[in-house]
Length: 119
Image (cartoon, rainbow, N blue to C red; front, side, top):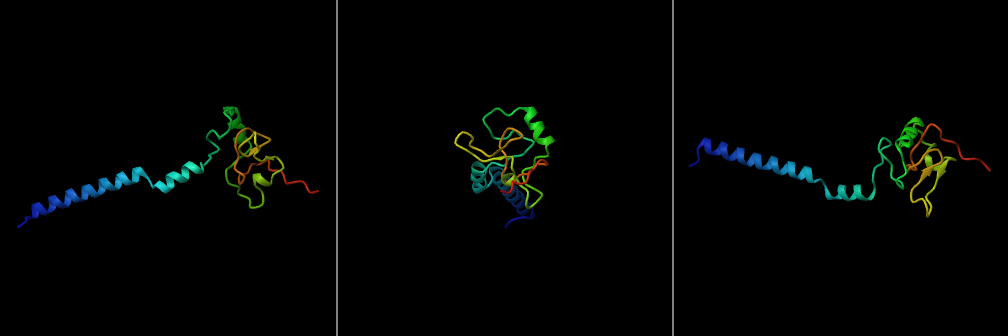
């Protein structure tokens, strides 16, 4: 027959094991999330953008000065429909902007957004 002490000791050991397992699983992360992170990196305008390695701290400061953000706050104004947008090419593997170096999010925005010219 088990005593109350045995029961509490077993409860403590089991609870500790479950908590440790939970921490390990959380630290490992979900493999689907890990794969998603590898295939589609999030670009934070405060961090160095993906480019050919020529982006300087001055370039990053210019992005900030121009008010560049990764996701437009205005439904009809976004990088991909801006006159200054540079679409990817064979030489430039990422979308860019005429105003600053580095990759831009096609759904991004800056305060210098220029409406497409009407023909």
